[in-house]
Image (cartoon, rainbow, N blue to C red; front, side):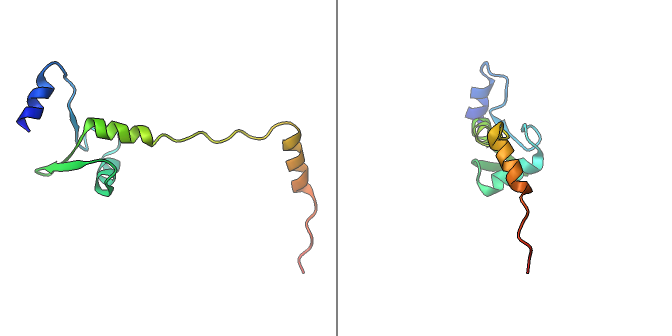
Length: 91
C-alpha cells in the first residue's frame, strides 16, 4: 500500500482510490455497486475502497441512452387516428 501512496504522491495530486465519501456518486450507490461486484473493491479497516480508474470506467458504462423521438408527419397522424377507431364492445 505504501508503494501505491508513493506513486500517487509523485506529481499527481488526485487520489488513486475512492471511498464512499470521496466518490462522485452517492455513498449508498458506491457501497451497493461494490457489494454486487460492479467494480473491484477492498476494505481498509472500516473503509470500503476502490480504484479510481475502475469506478470511473463503471460510471461511464452506466450512461443512459436517449429515448427515441416521437413519430412525426403521416406516421404520427395515422397512429393517432388508429387509436380513435371505436373498439368492439365487450360481451
